[in-house]
Image 1: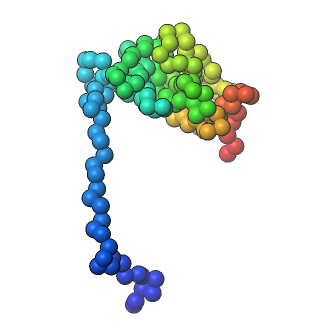
Image 2: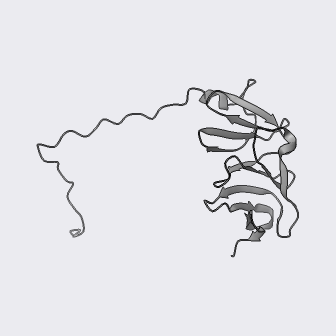
Image 3: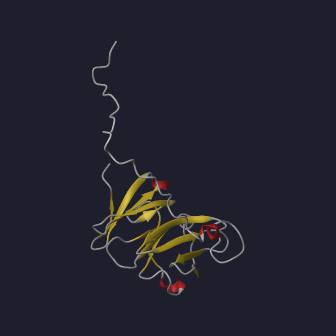
Amino acid sequence: ITNVFAHPTPVPPPWAPPPPTPVPAPVPTKWSEMSAGGHSGTFTSSGGIDSKNGKIVAGNDDQDPAVRLHDGNGWIEQPVQFQPTGLEYSNVEPDVLYASDNINNMVWFTPDPMLDPGAWLPIAGPGSGIGEFINPNGMFSHESGVLYVVDTGNFRVQYFDPTGGWFLLDT
């Protein structure tokens, strides 16, 4: 049986230049700093990662919870009072960073991730109601400013509209 939809592989004309040689992508010079170890930029238990405007932010959710920011010049560490299991920059606000905390069942935010630990404020707590979570995990910030959070323990997705509070995503 002949496949009538099959097309022969195109052959470039003899005057066509040769295809370009692929150039390997650059490798971050400090990538090894993101592995387990004992110096700045090491992670013993990864708790999410995101980037915005050339900055990389990553969480460490072990016995020494911290948010670490890499600004191109090295890692800056900020201890936090919660377990950052997920991190997501706002797609609207310049430096607003959200964090899910599935140990304490909360969602946090800060206007600047490198301020003092008290700059992190909860915007959701534990429970089963709207704006309450059990094991919040993955997060996504939409270009409209809405933050979606997977509420794993309650088997649902909730979203936070900064102008109106928490809502359930229709199922």
